[in-house]
Image (cartoon, rainbow, N blue to C red; front, side):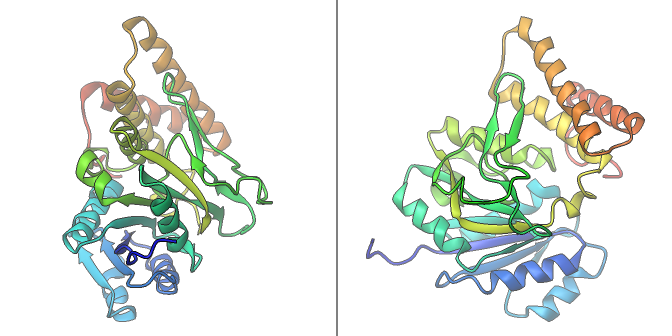
Length: 306
């Protein structure tokens, strides 16, 4: 074991409405066993009184108010910048609709020390309402067509994915990033607003020579997509379609002849999502089409009404 002092770690919890989830998340973070841990809440322009409630419940926890909804990317960037300014060696991004194990950070820190080439480290994520069922145990990613899948999704956790190993892509639900990675790669792309921004960040990190690790000893329980209206949010389909096409074009370009295949594959995957998530087909198809038009027209940032 290293005799060096423990690294400075800041957990950034981004909150946008839904203060009940944020209260439970922050309370679980305050039970984390890493010495000197800082918890930072970024309120993304909530309109439900979250800021006042959080300040009253956690007077010793720093809270930053963005003043408007900057999305997952912009809101988390506010927190990352603050954490780095305060000397953080490692920054953890944590969805507010999660609760964590007390050893959540220590397992990530141990893996980061053992694997200094790692720029991003991801937790084992389980379902909050079925705490022994996996949501994320690493993920696959196909660079040609953009298809990806959470490994183990929906499976009962019996220890089948209990080895620290590299993974194709991170998830922004619970993600530790090193200072070195932030300084070399940059932060999340504000213009993505939400969806696929973690994929894009991970591709930049890998292209810069950093590895992405899955760390099963770090456990998180996720309530799944509450901040964006749940898995059945039509708007999420539009964001994801737009951002995935942009990400693939920028980081994994293909020859002109293969572009129609890629576009078809991305749209087909989105269409499949309509079926598996129970989204009304007419509204879902309209959202996919709008996402394609947004990407083609270079329209990024927050979508009106979203």
